Amino acid sequence: KIGPRSAKQPPTAPLLHHVFPRRVSTFREPTMSCTRASLCLAGLVATLGGARAVEFQDTPLLTSMWEATSKDDNDALDRLLDSSEYAVNSRASDGRGLAWWAWEFQNTYALGAIIAYGGDIESTDEDIQGQTAVQMCVENPECDKDSLVQQAKDMVEDIKRRKEERAKEKEEDYDMDGDDSDEYADDEF
Image (cartoon, rainbow, N blue to C red; front, side, top):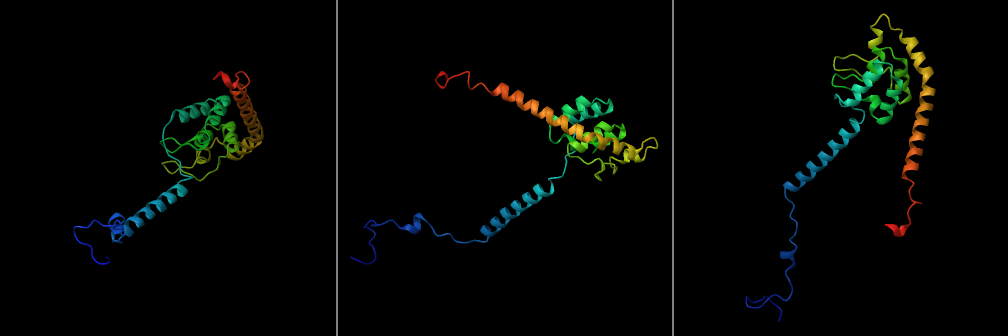
């Protein structure tokens, strides 16, 4: 019999609109979508815009780099720069980092290492007092900026070569330590 059901008859098929209600667009949904899109866009802009941003924070790494630079401890400086890809551009809470200390102590090796590790010894970045790293030398009458730059640039290739040698040694040490596959058969595990 076709027609309206009686209250006593169970439905022969489920009423799909009760199980899967139609989405009714409300004012709230577009707002939520816009909010999500805005947050995603803001996150993307922050990520891209902040890619060069460096957090100013005192760390043991920076303290050690300051000490190595002030004492002309080139081996220690190499180890520290090798330890983190961010070391060369890291900045302490006062906004200063390796470049400031290299200029302050007129450390040509540190200046050369900055260049070798991809840093810029004449960057226009400023510390929290508005001073660039190179100003540490320019404002010091006993500092010969041009001579320091030339000496630093003359060291870059040697610093890069030694950096590559250390990386190769580290990789070989890792390969020797990690190559235990021949010692054990598959059934021994």
